[in-house]
Amino acid sequence: MQGLDMFYDDIAAISTPPGEGGIAIIRLSGGQVIEKASKIFRPYQDGVDISKKAGYSLTLGWIKDETGEDLDEVLIALMRAPRSYTGEDTLEIHCHGGVLPARRCLETVLRQGIRIAEPGEFTRRAFLNGRLDASQAEAVIEVIRAKSEKSMKLAVKQLSGHNSEYIHTLEDRLLELNAMVEASLDFPDEVGELEYKKAEATILESLAVIERLIRAGKRADIYRKGIAAAICGKPNVGKSSLLNVLLKKERAIVTSIPGTTRDVIEEQLSIKGIPVRLIDTAGIRATEDIVEKIGVERSREVIREADLVIFLLDLGTGITAEDLAIYKEIKHRNLIILANKEDLEKKHITEDELGHYFPGVRVVWASAREDKGIEELEDRVEEMALGGELHSDDLEIMVNLRQREALIRAREHLEDVLQVMQAVPLDCLGVDIWGALEALGEITGKNLKEEVIDRMFTDFCIGK
Ligand code: GDP
Image 1 (spheres, rainbow, N blue to C red):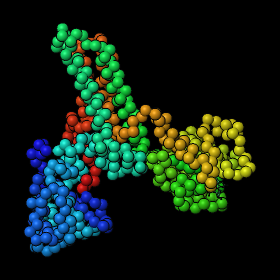
Image 2 (cartoon, helix red, strand yellow):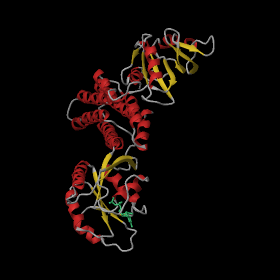
Image 3 (cartoon, rainbow, N blue to C red):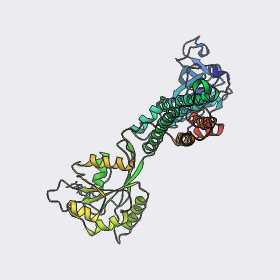
Image 4 (cartoon, rainbow, N blue to C red):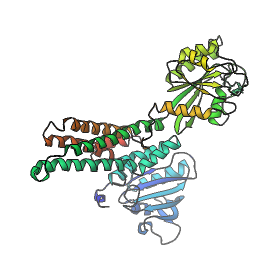
C-alpha cells in the first residue's frame, strides 16, 4: 500500500489475556520488527531465516535471550506489509500460555529497540494505514465486548463495512446534488434553473436514510448495553422458578417456605438477543426479621434502578393485600404482570380483577413450573426494552454514539437546505450540503481530528 511510507516505530504487546492458557501471543508491528525478531529467534531447522520468509508463513523454533539461552519454544506467524492487520510488517510470537513465558519473551523483544504498544495501537495503525475505516475500527471493540449473539452479529456486520456502505451511498447522492447546484450556478444558460423538485426529493430520501440509521443506533445501544429487569412478587409466587426457567439452569433455590430467597440474586442472560441483567428481589414486605428487612431495602433499590419490572401474581392465592402493597411500590415503573401458576386447575384471579386492580398493565398468563407463557413474556420484555422502537423497516446495524452525533449534524444541515431551498441564493445551499457531507465523512473517518481518533481507541486493550 502506498500510504505506508509514513513510518511508524516498532511496537509490541502481549495480545492474549493475562493468566494461564494454551498459548500466549505477543504481537509485533512496524518497519523493522522482522529483522529485530530474527536476532532473538533460533529456528528448529538450520539455515531458516525468518527475515527472508514470505508473508503468511509459520516457523517453529526458540526465543533466546541475548546470552543465547533459550527462553521458550515458540511458533512465529509472519505477515508482510501491506497484507497484515496493521498494514505493516507484523509478527505474532505464539509462546506457552503462562504469565512468565509471555512476559520473558516480551521483555526480550522490547530489548531489541521495540517499544510497548499503547492500548488499541495496532487497530489505530490499521485505521491510519487505511486497512479499516473508522466505523470498522470501532467495530473491533464491539465484537470483543459483545454480550449477546445479536450484538455480536451487529458488530461483525459493522466490522465488515456494512455501515460504511450506507454512508457512501448517502455521500454519492449528496455529491450529485452539489454538482447540480454548482452547475446551475456556473452555467445557468446551459443547465437551466436548479430542478427544485428533484433536489428536494434527493434531500428527503437522504433524510429518510439518516433517520433510519439514527433509529438503528438507538436500538443497537440496547443490544449492546442491555437492560436490567427486576423480578418481584410476594414469597412463594414463583420468582425463583421464573428465574430458573429463564436461565434454564438451577441457580436460585426453589422452595415452598416463604421468605427463603432473602437475598438479591442476579443473573446475566440474553432475551431475544438483548443482554438482560435479571434480578430476583427478596420481595417487598413488612417484616420484623432483620435479615429480611435488609433484603427489602435492597429490593427497593433494585426496583428503582431497573429498566423494567416483572411483577408476579399467584393464580393459586388470588390477589392479596401483600400483592397490592408491592404494586404500590412499583406501579410507576415499566411493568409487566406475570399471572403465574396457570397450570393450577382452580384459578383465583380473573381478567376483570386484573383490569380493576392494575389498570393498563400488560398481563402475561404463564406457568413457570411448566414453562408455559414464557415466550410471550420474552416477547413483552423485548418490546418494552426496545421502547416501541420496533419498526419493520429498521436497519439491523450498529451505530455508536459518535456516529449518531455525526448523523444528527448531517440531518440538521439537510433540514436547513430543505427549509431555505427556494428562498436563498443557490450557493448558500452548497454550504449546507458540504456541511452534511463533512459530518457523514466523520463516520467513516475521512475528516477526523486527532483528539477524536484518540477517543476512538481509549476503550481498547493493550495488544489490540
Ligand atoms: P419465590 O418464593 O417467589 O421465589 O417462589 P418459588 O419459585 O420458590 O416457588 C414457590 C413454590 O411455587 C414452589 O413450590 C414452586 O414449585 C411453586 N411454583 C412456582 N411456579 C409454579 C407454577 O407455575 N405452577 C405451580 N403449580 N407451582 C409453581
